[in-house]
Image (cartoon, rainbow, N blue to C red; front, top):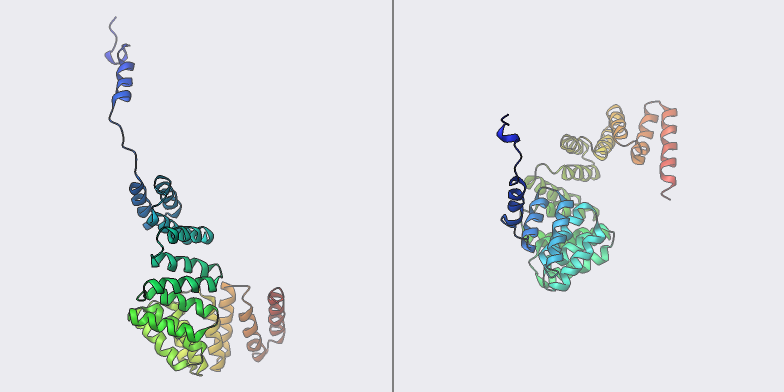
Length: 304
């Protein structure tokens, strides 16, 4: 009986396959630059875990690969691993003591960890190496603001603007410093410039609204908060702020609605309860006002 050819056993089949395995073309081993390139591609796609793995492999192959170490620090910082990021940037500084971006990057990680003094020291070092480093001025301004050094922050934001007159965030940061120093007109001018450069910057609308409230220009404040809400509908702070502006503009019903919406977004927002209480009392809801005041006590008790 004849057998189909495909089913007929042959002694040659296995040796031939093995021969292909034994003598087929070899795949070249990946180099440190190969892993670095792969990591950069993954990081550009927000795949930080994959990027970190490839940067680590690059560093295993070449422990002196400073750029891989720096970029791994960036990926770790993006993931929230601030201690790991600081360690990577510190290694870069050891390898390249004159590389200003490593000091700047370590400063941002330290600032995020609450070490504002350490961050400022890093920004100082970056600027000593590169006095034209506009981003380091901006970042130092942020750190100084967090230490309540608003004059120093204003000066740094101004230097950042000198280096890049189209830096919307530097104008926004200087606006915040101006507002903290009581210079509301100057703050409004800076927020307005920031919004000209970056019209989708919701925080600038919110904070310009704050400056308008300080100047008792409630209709403009309401307009700014409304635009902030349009850009960021989940922003409980903007609803609360607009509620305050509505209340001071003698519109308690609209104020109550805004406070209610703020509390839907953030049920533990103590300031919204605090500001809603007098509005409720004005509208004749004494029990509701008392309940809000009790909520403020409960929410702030642990913070004291």
